[in-house]
Image (cartoon, rainbow, N blue to C red; front, side):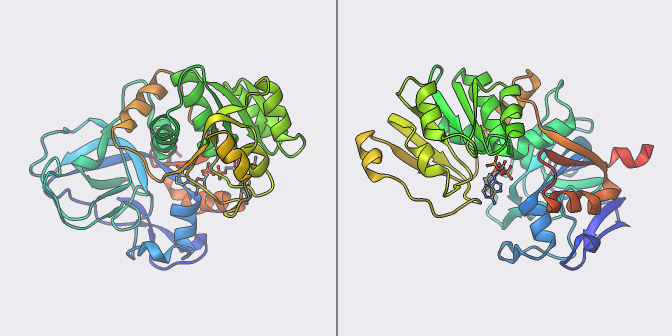
Length: 349
Ligand SMILES: NC(=O)c1ccc[n+]([C@@H]2O[C@H](COP(=O)([O-])OP(=O)(O)OC[C@H]3O[C@@H](n4cnc5c(N)ncnc54)[C@H](OP(=O)(O)O)[C@@H]3O)[C@@H](O)[C@H]2O)c1
């Protein structure tokens, strides 16, 4: 099969598109014919550049921390999946062979694309417990992108902040991955009122196009004043911030109302932010940080996407052979939506 392989860390040129033996599924594993794999700033680009050494990637490495596609072969002891099933896989998973449902597995674990071969290949083997069914009506490209961002947004908004129908959420960094996902889940899944805030008019427009009730450009407008105006002075119930912009977040924090909840899973614009403690206790605000997601939320995200409630923001599709170009694009910061590699495009190009 064809795969992108990293033999050393460095610039995009270290990605070698080469022939490698087809992987063979071991006990409890399935082999997926990949139709889509997302390209990510940290877990792919930064890792390839050698800046993620603490994750202890194993070289030579087929990168790609997720994939969606069709089951192409099943290993011994696999009962849950059959050839032809539509699946997606991502995240931390067993590294050693394991029983079909991974029950009782106590061996080493790690992410595909970091500790075991990943999705930048025509074929990839994963433990069957790491695969999730992709419903009919959801294409593989959308499934890969939804799996990457939506379960985390779901966890932050619904499990952690407990956002409810009729409540108001302020989404910061609204044009980004977690932002665009959070807007759609909040609006179309629970029926919350969404105020989307971003640093450019284009990103604000994207957010309102996705369903946000109101948009605020926090580089040209005062975020606190605008939000208080939009909420009749009450403030919002939930502040969903995954940026930690030290110049903006202190003002957004003042727009949190009584019993407000601030949830976060990111701080790339910070990480240090000053907040008003008097507002914190007077308004009985709770601040909650979380990483990761709950496995049981992935099918819920897929169902929302299949029902048209969640549109994946895909900027560009590229053939597997153009992984270097994909890395360059993500590294340049010129793209706002997701870059997805699709090995089936190599066959027709
Ligand atoms: N996506 C995930 O599933 C995931 C998983 C784990 C952790 N995280 C963390 O969550 C955070 C958000 O992820 P994301 O994928 O949504 O990010 P993103 O799309 O790359 O960025 C979100 C927004 O942050 C603002 N921004 C970007 N760079 C900035 C900078 N240097 N300073 C200040 N603002 C900046 C931009 O908004 P404006 O310019 O409009 O303000 C951008 O639209 C990151 O810290 C990420 O590490 C994400």
